[in-house]
Length: 73
Image 1 (tube, rainbow, N blue to C red):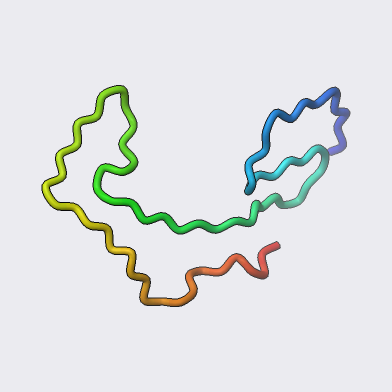
Image 2: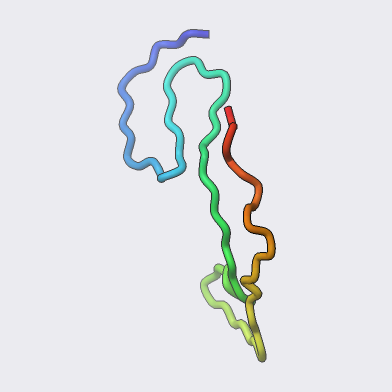
């Protein structure tokens, strides 16, 4: 349904973000990332105590291509 949009101020749009005003059928940002992180990497708090005696991150990826982002609508 059409709408009237007043003033719009955009402060920031990330590299994989989508901005739309008006009618839309489907919005799909297209980006892909692969993250390797060891033990205790994504802890968030005011005070975090992480004890890792021995930690290693396996970054070996046997397949050459992961799920692709091609041919998306």
